[in-house]
Each structure stands twice: as C-alpha cells, then as structure tokens.
Image (cartoon, rainbow, N blue to C red; front, side, top):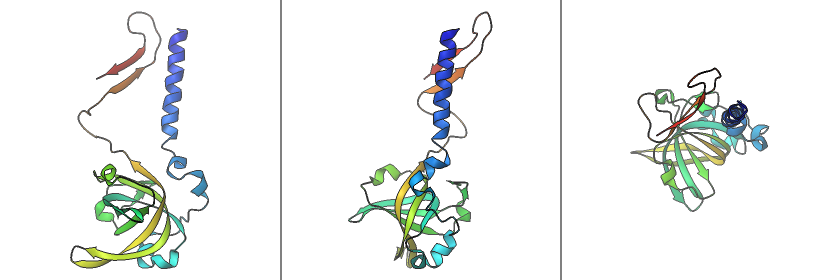
Length: 182
C-alpha cells in the first residue's frame, strides 16, 4: 500500500507540474509580465505601428511562413482572436497579418505545420512588402518570448505512447495501478 501511495503522489506532482507549465507565467515570463501593455489592440497596431514603437504587447495567431534573413528569422503570422492567452483557430475573425523577427536562429522547419503561437513582443514599426499582387503593410515586432501551442487531436487515435493512471484501493484483483500502452 505504501508503494502505491508513493507512486500516486509522484504522478500527482508530475500532473501539477505539467498543468503549471501551461499557466500565464509560462506564456508571459515574469520579466515581461509588468511591461506588457494590454490596452493596445491589433487593429491599433495595424493602423499606426510606428506610434507604438517600443511598446510591449502580446499577440497570437497562426504561423503562415518563416524565413531566415540577416536580421534573424522573420515569421509571418495571421493574427487570431485569443481565448485568454491562447489563439483560437477562427481565421474568419482575423484582423490581418504581422511580421515577428526572432533574432536568434530559429529553423523555419520547426514552424512548417502552421502552428498557433502566442508571442510577447516589442513593437518596432511597420514593413511594407508584396502580398500576392498588392503592397501590404505589416506591423513589425521583435520576439521576446514565443509559446508554440501543441494541437490536440479531437477524434481518433494518436501515434505514440499513451499513459493512463488508475489510483484506487480495495481488495481483490485490480485494486489500482499504472498502465502504459503502445
């Protein structure tokens, strides 16, 4: 019985650690938490990015593409509405696109599957470039911290291992245990 309790306590601690990793502090690290201006909207940035230069904001969206350039990796992002700090995949509600410059090496292949991201960023201005056959002005930001959201598979099975936990007491066969399935 003591061994089961020890295993259960260890797994409960692991579960709490996992949950805390998705908390606000994980999305907005402490050094930036007090600097973020939550009053600046994406539509305001799109209208006048230059007037907000130096402001720290949090934006979310879906990565459309990433390119390595001299100044770092430039990520083109379709802005998405947020549910708290997580962008929701409602592309019809997007207010446009923005460019995020990640100064350190970031391999574009790691963003190839169009993940959703939440970025703590400093506004650095605007950049106009071609989007299809028109000139498009993007708000331009410098990445301070980026959270890449893992997609959940709503139906069917997922590849890879699955873990289950059954904690219980009782007498007889199968009173409780830990299962790992492949």
